[in-house]
Image (cartoon, rainbow, N blue to C red; front, side, top):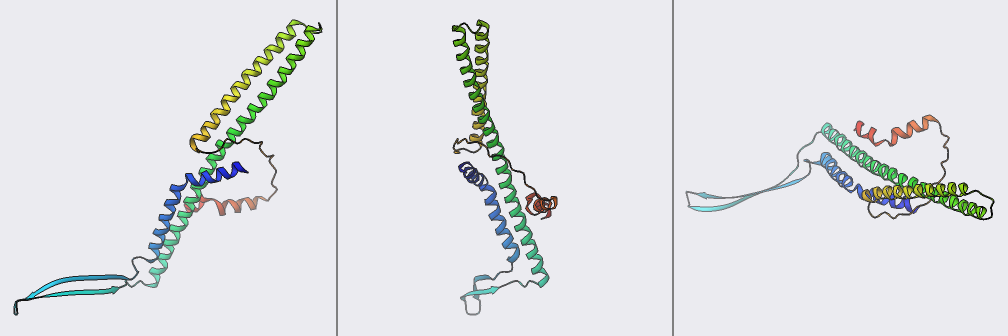
Length: 219
């Protein structure tokens, strides 16, 4: 649960640029719906000199104006604004999806590497215990020297495997940390996958309603 919370937080952090772009798109959509048909204030000032009386006059003019927009134009502008907003939402959703997918892939690669390292440690301990048993049997005269050598060779092989697995786990974590700095290295066993029995029509409808790529194409 802690790992999932961390991943959600960093997915949002790394898509801040996409969110900023989405906010700009919302502003553009609002402008498309209303501007340039909002009320505007205009002010002009000038000086004029009449030759007849040789005097100067200060003149000014102020106006409150609003451009007339026909009903069809209003509907068209609303459609444009809504399309911009839908596209912005879809692009932001796709950015979140891609970042979360990248994080999930790196996270699962690291968990798999850690699990492999844990397994090699268990195997190493098992071969260590086996070597101890063979050595006792050799001292008691119940095992040949060759059996001891074989057990020692097996232990050396498991030690190499464990060392390699440890390096791979460290490399996998370094990839996570490089892309998502600040995540805690908290390892836990992966939950067992459970089959989901739902009709194909359900998945088609879900994909079409939630696919940001489809929404972007339709916008």
